[in-house]
Image 1 (cartoon, helix red, strand yellow):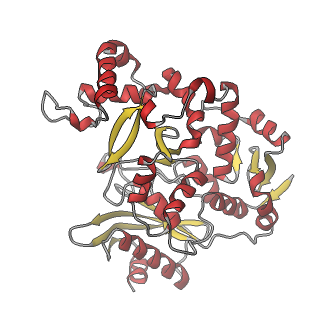
Image 2 (cartoon, helix red, strand yellow):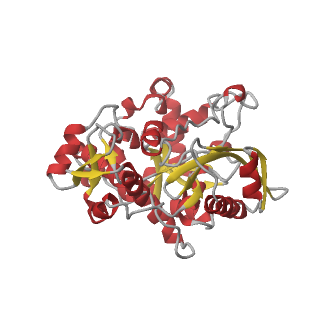
Length: 401
């Protein structure tokens, strides 16, 4: 069994995620799809104090690019939306791997409103027939009878109906307009799909999702893999060892870890380089709170000693770091985090607070790397004036130089 230092596990993970080296050229549209395929999925979130999360995750890997490219890939059918890790953009070639969830959504919890479906089945069927007959719709196309809503879950009935039909796979997101979903019947969005012909056998799906998770992670522990596609929570030791017996995975021993750990065969050529300390990340960038690198708190702690929770859903008085906190990745380490907001009308990219991780020492190279990365992010937002509020005085001085 190959022994790896923790730094090698980090490097393999960042290599798998497309964060080992900075982009060597200006991004082209195909790079967006390639990046999503590498990650296997791209989580969606609507908060836009800075660029919405899916666009920011791509920026972290590609550098500056037009955000419309992601929208175009969806509208052109290269991507589809569904409940994967959470709500995600997923390459359309993987539709079959999630189709079984649509055909039997009973295990999806709150993502499928089974009681609502049963209570309003006739109305839901009428709405589906209307869309089939007259064309795509948005939730905004339906008026709220009782006036303005009082929060995310205070949805008008038609919105709930649309979500049921989305969960069961009878509707898909054909495109997004101003980031609003446009729903259409699946047979128009995915006309070439046929369940009888194309649906993979159910007993093969878990192994395929586990293998895709391992490839996206680069180095995968048995206690991590369930999270990536929100599989039932349990260790998948037997399944991963079976994949290793088939030659798909390589068992490794990572320094300080007792858990069964594997590297995909795809990264076999990097293993010696990683074990010898020659595989290193040279990327410095900001990450979205919903980036795969940090979306699993247990994994981020084990790999980077970085304790990260998303606080935008936490009451303000209980937040430790801020509303929309972006982790700072630099040369293989998560070195800090910033609570950021893009003031588009004034051209200011505000760092409300800067937090540096314990044990991270200020150096000229690190300060220069972070300053450049933050400025690139600010420029991409068309808010080129970087403004730093609270934080360690010596770091604010160094980053403002």
